[in-house]
Image (tube, rainbow, N blue to C red; front, side, top):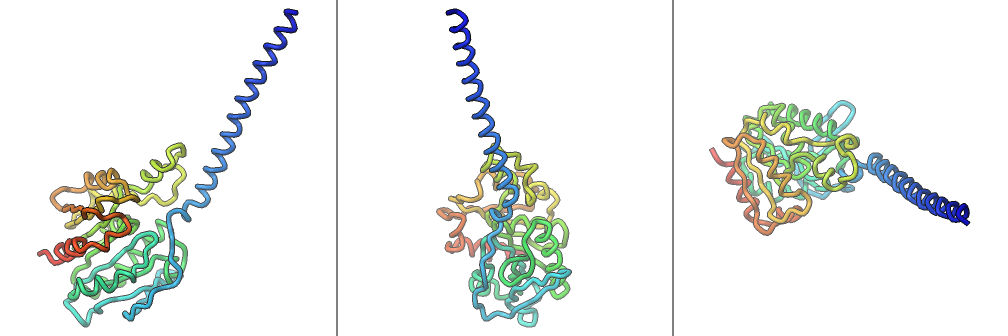
Length: 275
């Protein structure tokens, strides 16, 4: 009887051990599958090119970068104004041409360049962090000989491109709308069980570059930003030299509707026109 009882207890322990081992294996396999899916498809979660382009009536422009052609529009070409310019880098799902009318009226003494990222609109290629950085340098080098000063405006994803350009070229002023410290940090908070530092290809680490920026900078936050955590923007702010930095918050605005607030445009106008 004793041996039967011991065998039954041993069988029970083995069953429990097998259950836990099987459960751990299922969890591990699931972890690997999800992690592999995130790694292979990560750029699909980051870049959202919109098909086609909106009709603008503005002068088209093409800029060659190696074997790629970047396409967009130039508003107030140099023959119409003083020779100062603005280059706009938009969000990851934004049509830059959607801002043309507002910017055209707001900055009537500046040439304004709205160039689609590679893979966006009618620009060739596929977006990557290194690719967008290289394109930004190419755009700047292409247009800067025609202008006295270049002002950079970046929004959301475009703030990472803008901070990079501000450390590589002579920028007159820098405006960052809804910026982040590093996309890797946001991804890590979103997927805390995965090592995003190792997995992410495109990190856009603006915080690491902020202390190198010496040009006057304005950071504009949306009070109810549901995409970029306030802590991420605040961490970026802390990395800047305070004597070059101004910050402002649009009350009531969220990440996708900040352009609907008059205060947003007034902040842009006043900073650009400030002596």
